[in-house]
Amino acid sequence: MYASKGRAVEEWADRWFFGPVGWRVANALRSTPISADVVTLMSLVLGVIAGHLMWYASSRINAWGVALFIVSDILDSADGQLARLRGTSTRMGRILDGLADTGRFVSLYGHLGARLYVSGWGWGGAVLAFAALVSHSYQAAVADFIRQAYLHFAVGNGSELDIPDHSAMPRGASLVTRFSSWIYGDYIRRQALLFPRTAALVRALAGRGVPASLQRAWAERQRWVVSGCAWIAQNIRFLLLAVTVVPGYPAAYCWIVVGPLNAIMVALILAHEREPKLHAPPQLA
Figure 1 (cartoon, rainbow, N blue to C red):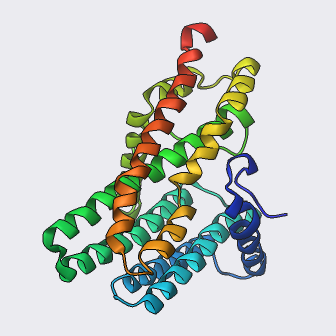
Figure 2: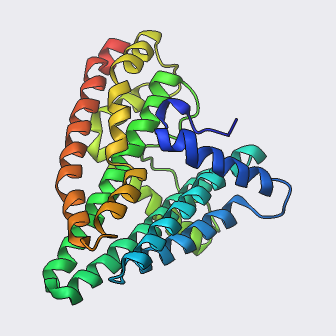
């Protein structure tokens, strides 16, 4: 049994492949001096290389890139499981994990943009890839927030839901810590802007238990929204890369991210934000 972040919010591919394989890796590393942060770094390096392989107009090289992305994602699963096995999960670990995801996909879209630029698309191709990168970042943030909110309100444990606060940076914090915390702070601020009602509900319930009626309603009505996150989350990117970039259509991948996936993202936000409206703070007093 692998160290799941919460089976209620995991996709099929995570439950049956990335999670179990990552568990094997984490178990193998448990008694070694290799830290979860080092595994995160390894995931980042492989992901950056995978993104670079999308630069080449070669189906074989692109296929190797998809394969490296999958290995990178296995390590991305293993780092969190290793931290949970050792009881060393920290907010900084979540920050580093997020930065690694960002680095992997900046490499992907940067190389896709360069490939489109030199293949005749010019700056239009670069702009398309940049729009896909921005879209991807918001889609990932939305999927993460919806899943963590489900764990927080419906399950009651395992959630890493975070909202912006005004706590001061510890004195003597390193430059790396300050920079990482600033990046993470920007990430959760964007999430709070996209989900203002849910963020307000979290604040209203701070220090109090989630009412049983809210827990039941959230579990019942938000389950399909959580399932819908699979369409905009990470695993589907590998399939999309395999059916677009590998056959030689990198622009198609970017258009799918910018068009259909953004439409799904907006629909999920609207569906999710209806729930906290039904449980406005005055009803919880």
